[in-house]
Image (spheres, rainbow, N blue to C red):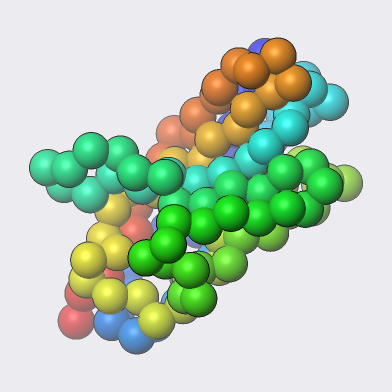
Length: 116
């Protein structure tokens, strides 16, 4: 089993930045891809970005250029640097990992609110 703890959310003004973190514990040796999803009020959860163990990154087209995903394999932690935040980025952000066996694990989520 893999346990994930998301952190770093908060209230930020439009144009501001936040850095989310997700620390994994447990069977971390089995983790392959780490990533982020988000769910805005009244909307379905959507994929934001992911990164493989080897560092290959993928982004939702609409977010590329503002969001940057990174990973520290030594710390079993994935990060999401979010810049130029806008009100439409308001959502609960969830960390997700996929293991080598194809199992998916989720963090508890961290709230990001962009408002003046």
